[in-house]
Image (cartoon, rainbow, N blue to C red; front, side, top):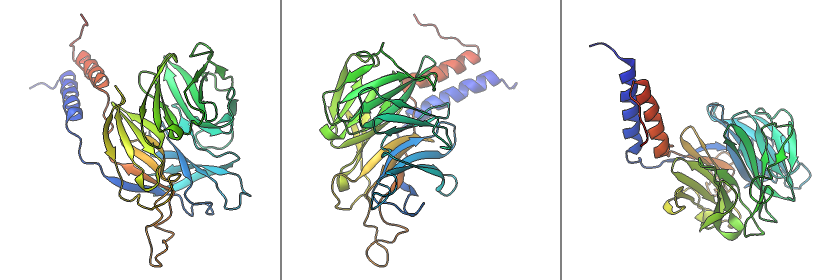
Length: 354
C-alpha cells in the first residue's frame, strides 16, 4: 500500500476531533510553585497577578504585592518563574505600585498595572520599555491585550470609576486611545469599585471580574453593550476554548468557577481542599491563566500546612503558591472544524459553504 501524506493528515484531523470531544478526565490539583523565601521574604499572603508567556515555554509572570512588612521597600515585585527549572525565579524587579494586573502578548511584551498607568516591559523584565497613562484612571486593576485583525489593543479597567479603556498599541512606543471603540475609547460599567482582572475571548468580547460587586461582565466586542452574571468574590478570569475560568478571592471558600463562554452560565465549580485556612475573605485565590493546556491560579492563603512545630514549616506553609489544575485546554468546536477543514483541504478535499 502506497503511503499518502495527505490522507495521514486527514486521519490526524479525525483523531483530533474525536479526542477533543471525548469526556474530560477528573481534574487534579498540584502545587506548581511557592514564592516564600525566594528573594528575602516580604509580606506573606500577597501573590496576586498572573500571566503566561506566549513564547511556548513553561514561563509564568506573577506579581507579589505588599513586598515588605514595614512598607519601607517598594510596594511589590514582578517575577519570572520557569516551571521546567524546578520552579526557580529567573528574574525579578521591584515596583512602586502593587502589580495586581498582568498581561502578555505574542511579541514578547509584559504589561503590569501600576496606579493610574500600565507599565510595559520586555520578556526578561530587564528594563521599562514604556508606559501608558490610562485616561481618567487612578487604580488600574485589570488589563488584557487582544490581537484583532493583526493589530494589538490594550484594555485597562479603573477601580474607582468602573471605566474600561481601549488603546491601540500596534506601535508600542506610540499608544493611542482608540476613540472608535465604545464611547470615545471608554466603556463604563455599573460599578465604582471594580476590583478584578480581565481577559478577551476569541470573538473579541472583554470579560471583566468585579469582586467588589460579585459580578463577571462581558463587554461586547464593539464596546456598545455588556451582559453580566453573578460570581461571588470574582477576582480574575482566563478563557480556554468554550470555558471561562473565574478565580474567587474568598478565604477558605475560594473556588474556580467554570462558566460557559456562550451564555456565561455556570458549568461546574472547582474546589481545592488545600485551601482551608479560616482566614478572611480578602485572602484566597488571585490571578489565573492558561499555560500548556493547564489552568494555573495563584493562592494568597493556605497557611495551615503545619510543620513539626505546629505553626507552619516555612518550606511547606504560608500562602503565595501557584496551583496547577490539570484541565485539558480544548479548542472551541469552530476551531476544531477549521483545523480539520484545513487538513481535509490538504488531502485534496474542499468544503464550500452553501
